[in-house]
Structures are given as C-alpha cells and as structure tokens.
Length: 344
Image (tube, rainbow, N blue to C red; front, side, top):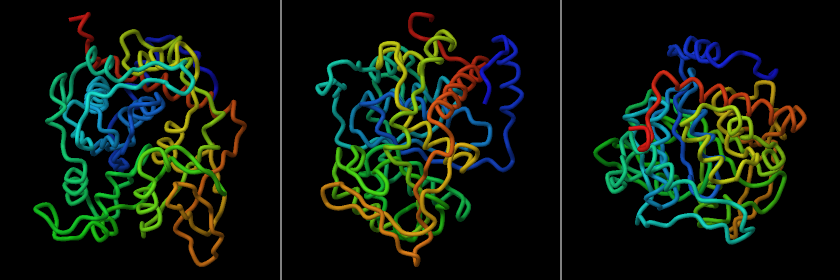
C-alpha cells in the first residue's frame, strides 16, 4: 500500500466511513502474552479496530495483573469497552525487565494505569474471566465453524480448553467443542520447516506440544522467520494520534525504534487470509513439536489441514503495510477516544 498522503482530518473521516459494521464479520478470539514484547499491543490494535472483525474475547496467557489490565485498557480505547478479558492464574504483579539485552522497556503497567478502562479498570484484574471458562462460554454461543482463534503467545489456555469436559456452557468436551465451533487456529510460533522459537519453549513446552500435536482442526502457522525482519511501529510513534495507548506502548518499549512484526502479521492473516502479503510454504504435511519446544514440519501428503506461511513480498514492503495499517487503525478511534488520567 502507498504511503499515507491524506491530512489527518481526512484520514479520520475515511476510516470512520470504512468502519461500518460488516454483516459477514470474522469472529476472532485473541490469546496473547501481552507482556514481554510490544507487537502484541499492535496486534490488539488491528483486531479491535478492523471493520470486518467481530472480536469476541481476549485471553491473556501471561499471569500478570498488568497484562490483563493493559489488554482491557487498549480494547476500551478503541471502543471495545465491554469485551470480556480472561487471564491465566495465579496472578502476580510481575513487570517485564529486559535481562537479555538491557535495551527494552516495560509498558503494560503504564498503559494499564494511564488508560485505565474497559471491563477491567485499574485495580480490578481479579475480575478477569478464567480463560478456559471464557473460551467455553464464547465458543458455545457462536455459530458452528465460525470462530478463528489467534494464538500469539503461550499455550496454557488452549491446552486447558482441550482438557475440558462438559460444563454449564456446553455438554461437549473441549475437543468436540473446538471441532464444532472453530474454523481455524492461527498460531504465531515455531520456525519453518524447523526450529526452536520462544513462543514454543518460553512458557511450558509440554503444553505447546499438547496443543499443536493434538489439535484436530485447521491450523496455520506464522513462524519466527516471517516477522523477524519485518519492522514496524515507527510511523505510529512519529505520526500517530496524541494520547494513543499503543503508540505510547511502542515508545515505552522500544524507545522510538521500529520492532519486529510477528503478531501484527499473524493477526492480519487471521483477518484477511493470504491477501497480497502471504503464500503457503507447504500445501500438505503437519507441524510436530518436541517436549523441549523445538518443532519440525513433517511432509505428509495425507495431511492437508495444516499450513505454514511465507511472505510473498519483500520484507520492507510488508513492514510498510503493517505501519500503514497500525496508523490508520489508531486514527480510526479518534471519535471514541478514551482519556489518560492526566487529561481527565
């Protein structure tokens, strides 16, 4: 997509027109580790503002109070005030510290405090849903084969869903509920055709293996190699609206630098499919995860319900596309912006 050439007022008007609800909106559930990287925040921005998306719920798979509160604050800023948020227990007040490179900053507590709002305002993280219960409730209420789950983090919540039996929400077991309601699982994780990537080993790799190796439905994988060199976020920092929480998150986290686009790319595929950015890296086969979190693609012509993605455009063009999407999405919320504590 070409660079934005519209004045800010025209952008806002154009986006407001584009955000008319679609009768064929794609139903999404986001499962995020909003904590140690800021691309999760960018992914939430895209999902919360896309006119073709019906965002059903957000589950947080990192057990920090600030992660849950920041998710709620971001969603509220973009008009998703009542969206249910689940978070893995037991909760802690952990904050991110970059002990690897000592160059990245913490953002979730700051966003949670300064943009407090939504279903989990500041101080109310304990009111978050149990993520497995939230999965079962939302899936049970959805039309059959209509929900896309986007996993951009660890696998505790999805593993828990697979282990469930009948309850007050549905008589179906976890695997049967998934088979009935979920159309596709889109995962940011692993490397293809093989590798050892953080989302797969950084949490509990046994749970990663449980989900990936047990899931019976359609799965698309967006690997580390897809987003590693697709940089984005700098235009949002430099040109985004004042008072935007995701703009602030990128500033807090990366100190005015662009970041890899792992999660925004994954969410963009979940919303729009291959589009002009992606192609499939394999038309058959399946992903196998070892107990240590390493993975390899098994080329089996008898399996056609799993695929991994490749970029079909140069990395700079993909980064420019994500930058444009983030900027337009941020401006789309200006008619319903929330206020920071300093502005109230």
